[in-house]
Length: 168
Figure 1 (cartoon, rainbow, N blue to C red):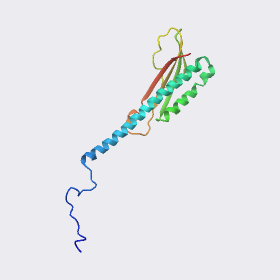
Figure 2: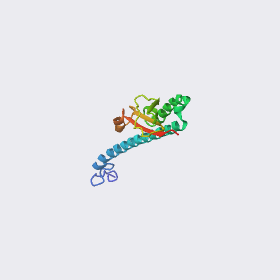
Figure 3: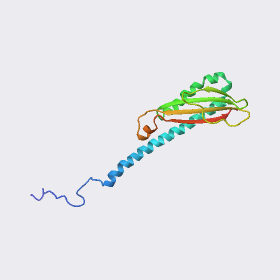
Figure 4: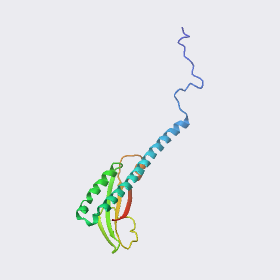
């Protein structure tokens, strides 16, 4: 009977069941950190792409409506500020600023239609002799949102884009 309940001695290659190698123990945390960093980098790239898309869309809307000639349309420009804030804050916590300017190439007159706080017009006006141009500059200051190392590194920085288009 003692043979049936005898303990088996633990020796040989299979004695440490459930253990992992030192290489795997070092590699797994590095892999997890790279995946997390890559996810945050892709999130920032998505935010930058959305920034460009929204600025382009606002530029198209403003130039197609002939906003500079219509006082009622100029009064509606604050709607675009709220629209931009909603579109960008859906991806990342932050504060949007929108600047819309009209430039008359014939006389060099610059008319600011909407001025965003901390967002000056970007980009040089093209050297045209005649024509009216609209410049839309969009700035997005990233907030102090929760996140990993990459998000904390970019917190407080400002992403900026602009588009210039002739009014038809």
